[in-house]
Figure 1 (cartoon, helix red, strand yellow):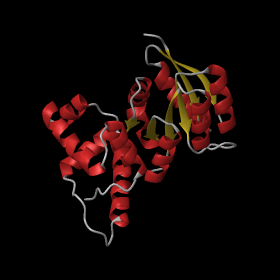
Figure 2: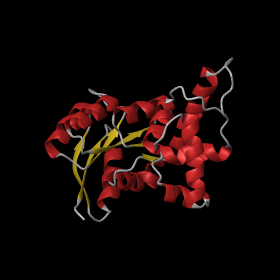
Figure 3: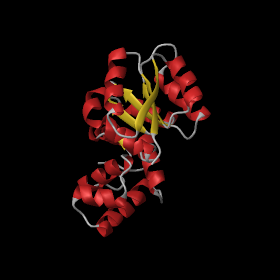
Figure 4: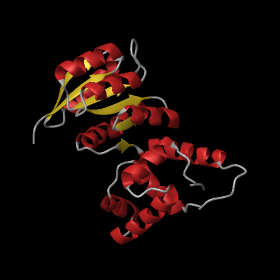
Length: 220
């Protein structure tokens, strides 16, 4: 397997040093560059062409969301992990909408950094359980507000809500089955119900609807 080349962009030197230490300890991973502001992040990404870019949202000169957007435009093959203190479902959606593959809270950095980098390097989406819950709560709140006073649609069960959360986190059917102690067939049945309530036919569409909070008829 080829070495994984990583760029770190954060305006705090201590945070960069901590991440570099953790990432360098992983065999086959190498931090090829660091940036202390958004402008440097974009310039170094274009110059170094990393496999993974870890980008803080709150950076001077160019904010992290715009950094994500510019890197994705210039380097569509580079996977981007957003690192932030913001616990906001709107911020998660903005980051993923700009092209990020993962969203990691700084409070989860020590526990989840290597998991997040590995997941997005493999082409998966990465949201920690805490971030998934933040997005899910915002999604359901939006559903409730948009449907206030309207005819009630199909209700979701607690298990279906959990399925949606795992789906948005990039889990495969097999991984969802393992996490929830279900058979693959049962997971497929749950997904069929979820797709029906979201009015979609594929997991990519279901994830997009969930993350954007579109009008779907889904509610508690």
